[in-house]
Length: 295
Image (cartoon, rainbow, N blue to C red; front, top):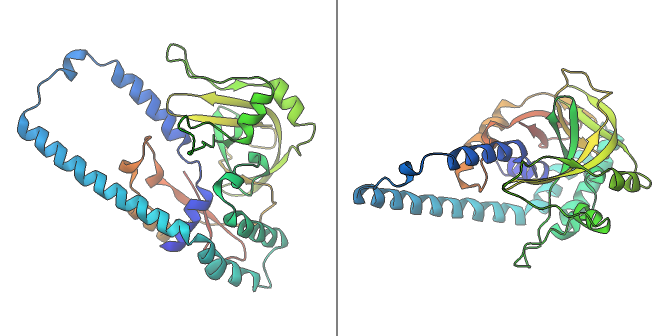
């Protein structure tokens, strides 16, 4: 269980993307309901019961996040003793996987503020989403400064947009959409290696970045590094990407999926999520206890 929790904290950093966008649509639909519904008088007994349920949920969610913090505090030792040591002792461990594990060790020792100072395509792992038909993107999310009451986005992507004097704001009166910034992309790709390694649920695919954009919505914000779709076939289900050409063993792990679903508490998240439907699709070749999940 602890190994699974560790993995999810490492790999599933941004899995709310599609579920949050669905949540925005639901919120808009809810806002369009007749006002008469919200004006219905609720009997006192039902109000008392609802309040009791709310207090119970708050208590459960507080315990849930306390457990996450406890496990997160011990993730470095858990990874090094239970996964890394055994993997490095395996003579059959592929070289790219060894480099990835050693880099992951250093990554886990960094504070969160340092982890966010690397552009998404240069990260050890990053999410890849099919945003539209035939349109794939490497996704990165804002990193908010929690010490600042304004929760300023201090991600390198935001800093990059600021350097080009590009502001992104939410306007409730206009349709939110992904906006590409060609000028930023042209400047970025002069010094950034555009080649990335992505992984479908069955094979690795070497791809190339071709544009950069941003999306700002009420419940969701993200940055998108658009991928050239040419190397992919229509049937490919792209799951994740990495700066390393990893060697994976493509196999679902039903027992791990069962554990994950049992420990998931979507009712405790701010945005709607389909995390309980996450399934493992691969593991790192030569490594025990490290699995790759995707929705």
